[in-house]
Length: 336
Image 1 (spheres, one colour):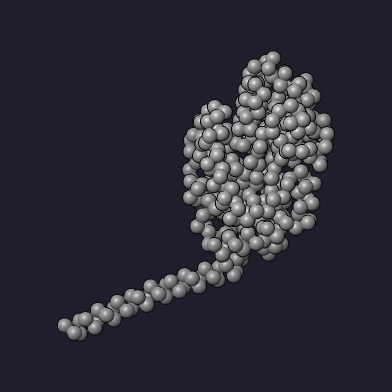
Image 2: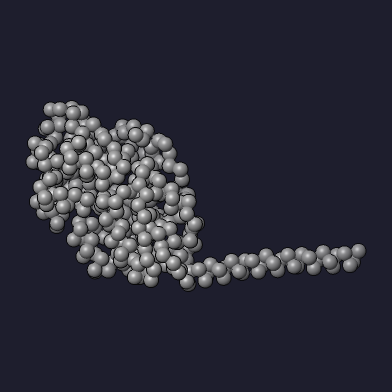
């Protein structure tokens, strides 16, 4: 009896030591991972096709981040489903810091308000690392549209209910909701045409397939310079340095429509905290550097540089606000 109890005690002690060894090993592994990260290229998913403002900004971030990490940062475009396909690819990746997402609010805090629901739970599955910048929006038309100002366009739309077409990067995209907010305020009705990203929407606008769109400045800047597109107003509270001739909404006779137009770096929620901290440190150093700030301002982006804690608070606030906004403007819940 006594011998059996001793043997049982030995077995229990052995099991306890193995558990302790595993725990110590796991902690040691996490520490080593944080100290050595990164040891291979980092994949940065952009959930939109090439050519739009999101893609343009992401490539600038990748270019600036690579030397700070000491590893290549490879941009991969995965567009589709209102930016949910690329976001899903990031969520399903190994949570080790080597697959990140460069995204706006659309697939993160907005997507759950539309059908079909995202194949992920952004509140549970995604963590924000750094808010990189704000992306000023412009109201643009094809240059052949007979309206040189926003009031002239509104008058044109009122005279032709639903006969003018506006394009967006997809149903449920921030620019889609903003166009609906603007239409409701102006008392006009247009027909919505969703595209698979800003790039295709701009192509359609250039071709005259649509008359009106809200786009980031960088996505349309060269077309404005070439005279193929016309900017009617900016959503910024003051005129943009790069486009001082373009009035604000207030100057055009409308109340300002606030755009939650951030771009951020996000990661799978189970990514080790030490890896997130490493990424956050390098990203904040990049975004707050004079060189990066000057370059982005020259492209009409506004550098922000908010860390993970502030990012989490901002996302939580948007999760609470968007359902009421979507309901108030009567946008259909179904994606097209």
